[in-house]
Length: 435
Image (cartoon, rainbow, N blue to C red; front, side):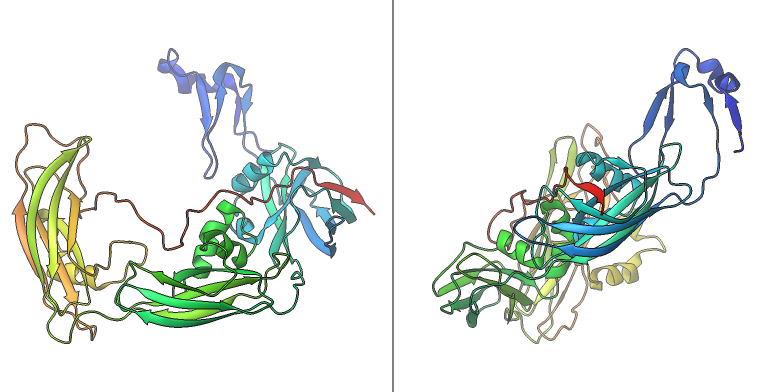
């Protein structure tokens, strides 16, 4: 061990002139929360080197039944591992806990015990939340060194077998109508399907949605999410119409059939598309200036973007004149920005008149831009409108960014009902016993 700073007396020079105000030493980790110490209670500070402190875990065997779930594990602490803590969770949540700080927070939430010994075949029982059939899970250990520092994570994944279901529950589907903004689909269950539900996603995004929401809601598999976010459960033939969809867009509709006991049958994937809007002519946009307003110490400029009947979609922005007149932007930069895809911005593609409200500062010159493409995906000319916001007696509380940001708006969900926070996997009573 190499002692770099010895006793607190050696730190006195550091606090020196600030002795009247500095009375805390704070350690700020890269991940996790800052840890503070009262200076008068700190005896010494030192730095040292420690090797890998981990409890390597492997899964020997698994058993899942109504009588109780059991895992048989081999756990081998490294030489530097003084203790370790262990938990199980869904794979989706485990994928999010990649740092010691994140895993330690989850272990604290579950009141996970500390272990000090190695196991060759530990029987792990006492799961407060049973494992869900047909799902992916992980066993996670967090090693601690002799200074009680959370160190390395070890992980072993496993899957549960699918639950048996009665008969062959299934649902047939048929797209009965589609417009530029709506899709209608008829669902018909077979005699083995006691109930079913369904959920619509933009094509190829269901797995992304699962990765986003599963850690929060405790979904063990995609079927859990479909059931949670889907519409009500249905038992007879039903025709649903989704509204407010994006024109010219492909969608995935996941259908979940269930048997008389509520057991999941395999998901069914249906495909549908909305019709394209616009024409084959030149797509243009007209930009008009609205009111300049203030709210909660910030200022906003209203701008309306009106596409012509040839436009299938358009994209809009404002930027300060100063920023536009830099090498980074200019017309080429604006065109590259607007023609680029931005799937994480819900306002990026506009399909009709866009009454936008942008953050903007008083007495500032801006340029509004918009560009549209037609039904053949051909871009039209770049529309622009230069304007200067009016002067106001007070300056803004927070200066607006050079590239205008929209004022927050309330978003509606295509899922069908508001999600509920439930189903989290909690394992506060797990035990390890050598067998």
